[in-house]
Image (cartoon, rainbow, N blue to C red; front, side, top):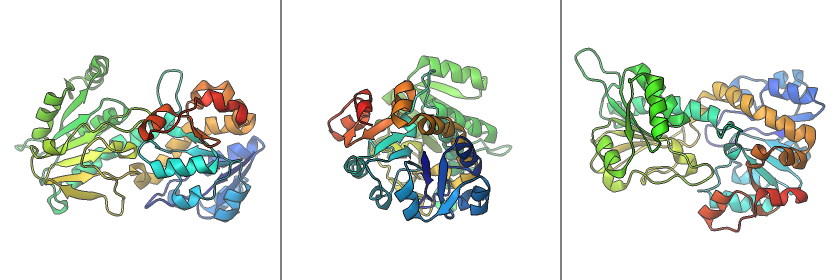
Length: 372
């Protein structure tokens, strides 16, 4: 199988779809790997490192023209989507539910598109989303702490406080992977931490994990409103796999918050969980609305590209080897969890939450296997 890995072109995206070690593993399995020149620069992996791993270095044109499988990190940008062909497989994060232009372009391409974020596991988790959720959760507290600085429009509060001055209050909406990792960082800083979730089992697990260092609240609209009123930082960490994020914090609720408080929307890839959220970039990460600082960077883990790339490859490589070793159709046929990652194939949407979000016809992924 011919594997192609282009350089990421999203704003300030430094991750890369394959590390040199991953390229070497694919080559050892008898596959060819073509890397776009400079693709690994953002993680300190030179072209020479990929050549030593057995890969070929080429232009972006050659990568897309020769590959059977395109491996990326972020959703393909418009210029990349135009390069896709019906005989290719795209393996990357897609986050299609809130992104109709991307969905339409992928449908038009005819390509087989597998989204990392909807691949499941036997234990019910999202194993290819998990490493980036871990990174984003931990980064959310760093970002929130920085945005609280007065020079950035924040309240001028130090999350950890100092002797004689109370710590800042951080409210985390959602007790999943992002929420737990955010809590871990916030507790480490010495902040006053509250997590809201709608699962008693999750809240009990969090209480046990943190030994009472984190307050847990069963989430309802009234309790959420009460929690954010005196929060210094609110982290949005909700996820409905494959679907658009619910808008849990409204504009009216923002008006009750303390001026200069910070919202960090980790759900922004799926449209965001705050009514006032709009995607930002690392080049211009924050804006202020209703007196509240918003941090809504859609590729947060890209800022710590080396850590993120290696964590991501640890999760994505085994499935990529399945796709390459067995062939795409057979790999999907054998592994129902990998099949859950199929979002678009041969011009149809095969992920129901995406179809519902965009009012598009839906074809079950299993029904498309014979056509791949």
